[in-house]
Length: 243
Image 1 (cartoon, one colour):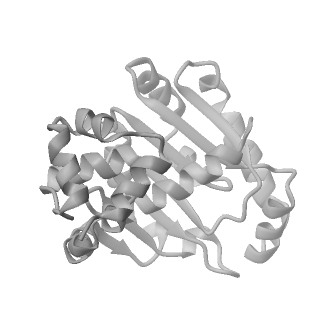
Image 2 (cartoon, one colour):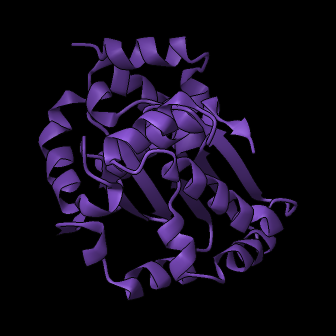
C-alpha cells in the first residue's frame, strides 16, 4: 500500500520529493519508496521529515505511535503539587543555563521577577549572545485578566501585577532578540520554557496559579508533549500585541 498521507502532505505544503530528500539528507528515491511502498523510515529521518512538513510523525507513519507514546511519557521529569514546591534553585538553574530560547506565557508571573531580580538583565545578556526571548503578559486592560482576577479572588490585583511585571521588563524591551507582547487569551496554562525544558502550571478554576500543580517536561525527539505545549505558546504569540 502507498503512503497517501505522506504524498498528500508533501503536496499540501507545496514541497516535493526532492525538497524533502534534500532537507533530510537522503536520496529522493528513498522518499519515493516511503510513499510507494509505505516504508517506515529510520527514526532520525522521520523526525526531520515530519518537522520539515510541520506535522506529527505519527500522522505520517501511524505504526510508530507506540514509540511516540513511550517517548512522550519519558518527557515528564517530575510533578510538583503546587508552584511553591518548585525549588528556587531549579528556576535559577534553568534561567542561567538557557542559551537559545526563553519563552514565558503568563497573566502576570510576578513571582518569577520578584524572586529573580536580575532576570531582566539576564534576558538582555542572553539575547545579546544570540538567544531568542519571548515574553507574553496578560493585557491589564483585557476582560480575560479581569475575569481571572475575580476567579482567583484578588480582583484588580492581577491586572496590577501584570503592570508591575511589564515595568520590570522595560529595561530589556529595546534589546534586539527580546520581544514582549500583551495577550488577552483565556490562559489554561502558564508556560515557562528554557531551551529544552518547559514548566507548565495548569490553571484551576477558583485557585490562584501559585496553588496549582507544575509539570516539568524535557524535550525528547519524537515525543509530543513538549511540542504540544509550545504549539500552544506559538498560538498565543501570534495573537499577542506589542507591549
